[in-house]
Image (cartoon, rainbow, N blue to C red):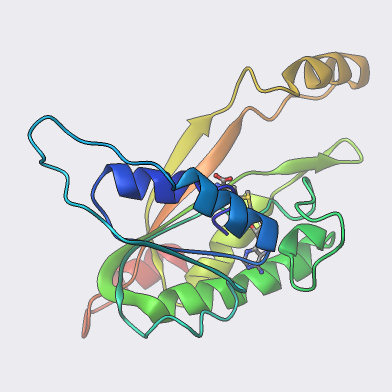
Length: 208
Ligand SMILES: C[S@@+](CC[C@H](N)C(=O)[O-])C[C@H]1O[C@@H](n2cnc3c(N)ncnc32)[C@H](O)[C@@H]1O
């Protein structure tokens, strides 16, 4: 779900090798284009990295070996709030309207993340909510549950404050006209895959 490649650009700048997967060929092309830069640090302290990309489905990361990944940083669509493919690519989760169905698909994503991540390592996922028929739709919390259900434990819920977006003036007007509060945050959930043989009872009592 690497989109236009921001995460891989940051990996390159911070000396991490990366693998970017996206279901949309155009995203992968854009990501490759964005990665096409070179830079130097004054003291050469950032190692040269390899950024690999491929067109694939996050629900089936079959090109990635089990327990081979040190860190997952992903940014799924928020159900169908923003459709990322006009031509309705098969498997593009930004085409899924039903929140229940979206949470089920995200459970498959979570399962694959769990499989490829090394034990006792972190999986970060940025996700937000939406509003339909004036009511609040908790996309993020449904997704959080999907990740807990496959065995992750929640280490942090970091709130990313959203303001001054391109669409903000539209939503300010709309919220005043229809009397609802604007959604001005996203969640950056940081999950941890338990270590091998880790006793989980203390977490289970509070999370499940
Ligand atoms: C919120 S965007 C990611 C934006 C990204 N952080 C960036 O910097 O541009 C979500 C991405 O998920 C991709 N996507 C949707 N369903 C997918 C799936 N099943 N597997 C992989 N990628 C998927 C979309 O094509 C889109 O590029």
